[in-house]
Image 1 (cartoon, helix red, strand yellow):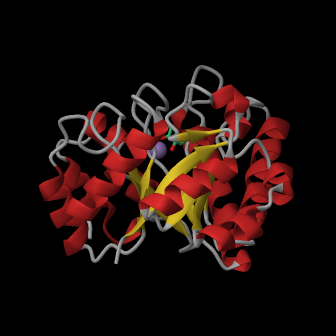
Image 2 (cartoon, protein in one colour):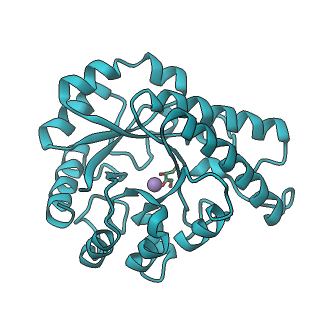
Image 3 (spheres, helix red, strand yellow):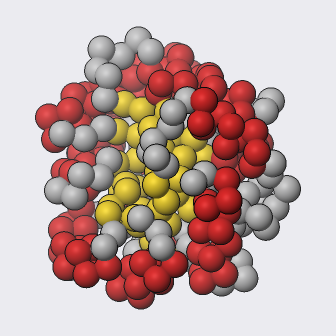
Length: 271
Ligand code: LER
Ligand code: MN
């Protein structure tokens, strides 16, 4: 069974980012629960902030799970990435992700690596950057296993990274790893830009698929764009996908409409 989730950002610098709820964790949990979501996905400034939140009380009060924790604040706030030319910056990036993984694992939630993958450039060529990323994913995958969780790696569209843009490239990145604890995150918005067909991309991810960002073509709620969900739902069924479909979307016109449209789309297509 696929479970539903909705994003909550507590990162001031990501106020304009593609997250449904911003700033008020309790209000977000209340809305998510009222609409029938199974879980929230949290984008927080740091592991310390996650640990300081009243998450145990809120999750239990509202009957929600924690679907995943984002690590993008490392990039958005500190400009850290796993492919930085500077080895001490790469180490800081990995430490930042490791701490978020530990904070999420307390709630059984995997961490997501999206923007923290960085990009190759004049200072770090593609092969070197790919090596840095693979080595970091191997170490972080081992850490995830120790923590009893997994790590989600997210290919992004070409305007956000030049490391991996498609699920096929993601599979090529992860296949040589000794760890089996790194999975792929399929964000339908990025896939709409990069994949020949979205269902084909999902099938490319295959057994690596671990998490889905459930959103429409224009990065608004499901039903607000021109995405064709029928073949997407069919592909997910054929993979026996049983992870989360998490709404990572702009709150247009507002968070509540976005949440309502998403849960309607979720019930229509994925349940
Ligand atoms: C960024 O575009 C994104 O999709 C996030 O989930 C990862 O940082
Ligand atoms: Mn995403």
